[in-house]
Image 1 (cartoon, one colour):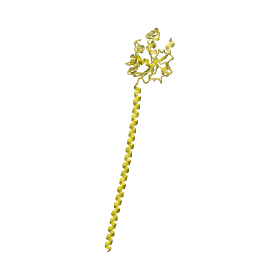
Image 2 (cartoon, one colour):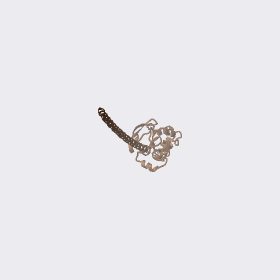
Image 3 (cartoon, helix red, strand yellow):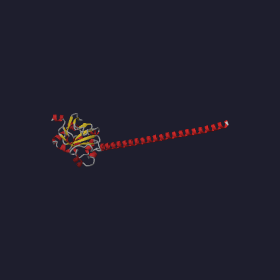
Image 4 (cartoon, one colour):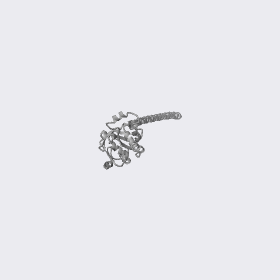
Length: 248
């Protein structure tokens, strides 16, 4: 009798233990699924965040590239800094070719000026044609300069005897020509003020924009013209250094 009771008790205990183990196992499986689901959700969120970050980075890169391209286009446009009431006349006179705004930008300044039909007298003066002892082509083509370039009309205002005298005096001609050359390239917004020229004297530039004046003697024809190594300001009068004026 006791043996049967013990057997029944042991059997019940075994069933209960198995059931308990089953519940524990189920509970463990449920927790694992929850952890896996949370891990998947977190991974999905991180992936979404990474994708969003990558998209934003790509957008920022695209915007930066567009800005750089715009700035590069402006820098590459030789007409972007032109200033002067007669720039349109210049464009009409020399619409294309080596002497145009675009053409001059391709060559160093002495070469570029030689291609411009508005600067033939200046070209002859700096290239040794006016006086064989004055040839500034290599000098002008060899560094960065700002060149104040009297047009042919400007030279036409100089009395013939004075121009002939300059042609016979190499030192005087060299002084006058180098007085029109400033070391370094000056943009239109930088050129107002006093600047030491290649001949050592100072030229005074006043006003701004199309109203720029040079030594209160020459007005602006068209400025900000780019060459490969210089910025050119075509002017309507030939400037005379103070030293030459004093000698006269």
